[in-house]
Image (cartoon, rainbow, N blue to C red; front, side, top):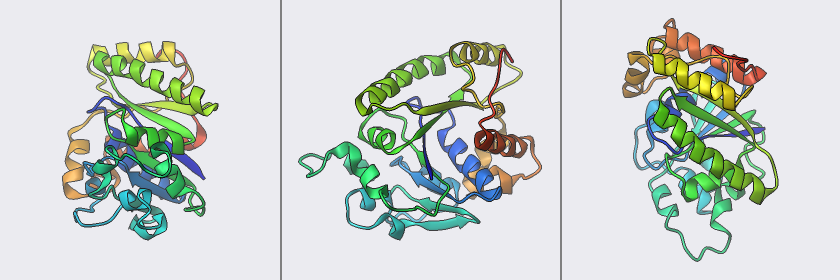
Length: 255
């Protein structure tokens, strides 16, 4: 089982879009996938068609009120979801817990979901306790990137955070990037991608996900792009990205 944190401390880079569509595309290929919504906003659940607000989620598992397997919701073939839950936002303010606050998610997952091939964790756009829980629980990191220079500045901060965790935990993450909001008609897009290729050689997944209106529309219908517009360019991008992820297919040189 591979545990992957999908993380970027900058908002608006396509984390939840990447999580929902990539998870579905990988599940389509036959892998067993669990997606965890670790963002108190709960947008991943909405993107997958789960809108009830009173569903218990990863919050109760982290607070030891329920076992994590009790919180699973089957949302597609080979794909199950654990929602955020209404108490997740309170975890950031936890004090006086009997166990270190940063290992709540790791402890909740320990010994569970062993039949799954992948666990993907959709992280909030922050650098707080929830992100710390995701980093401590995960083996791998996937960083969605928008093609603008502000995203580059945010990435510098994120990589510093990752390095601090690697030092503290005395381990190295497998870290990959994905161009999740790429606009091929904008010069800035290719400029940002070339900067990334220079600083992160062989770490950027080969497929860029081109920004389209369809990707913005499908969450309002509770569908992934593979369902909402299965023959669209965006659906092809995510199916290609799923193959890249499974095969660790990355870019080389300037694109």
